[in-house]
Image (cartoon, rainbow, N blue to C red; front, side, top):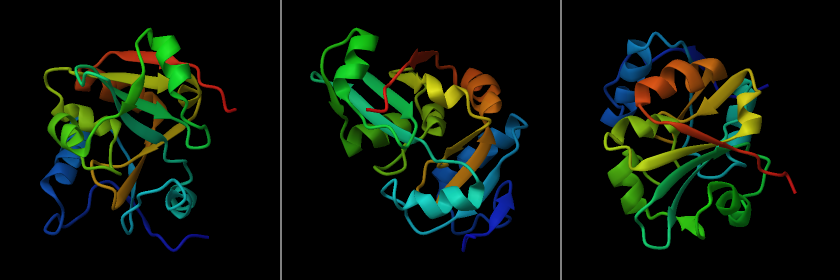
Amino acid sequence: MSDYEVFSGRPENAENRLERETRCYDFLDGLGIRYKRVDHPAAFTMEACQAIDAALGVSICKNLFLTNRQHTEYYLLLMPDDKPFKTKQITSQLGCARLSFASGEEMEELLGCSPGSSTILGLMNDRENRVRLVVDRDLLGEEFFGCHPCINTSSLKLKTSDVFGRLREALGHEMTTVRLSAE
């Protein structure tokens, strides 16, 4: 049992919501994509997401914003929350040099998100397609997908087929699929 209330769709009152969050709801609603929503205190860790996951009945995936050493190539890696991030696994599959975490400033500039709230929905702010979407294959096999609406005080549950179908197409970003090991 969770302490969080689950809502269908956007908040009725957007008065105390950030514009970046409201734009996510506008985007999803404009595509006709249905979603469930939970509002909660800021969630900065995967552990903090466990109660949120329980309320929504879905695991919020890890969303890692990465860059190369020169800060000329950017990647948004979506992966299951229970898998460890190992840069060697990613770089070998992407055919690139070592990757590290991009800065908060780069995340704000390219995704319109602050650290702790990166999300596939942030790609709507990357109109120049500077960020490459990379998805662990295991996420594609799930019925539902959990993410933040560009802010880490709300979480969404969407159909995976909608996320990697209509949503990804509307975002205008190609997707690279990788297979990450759980070890």
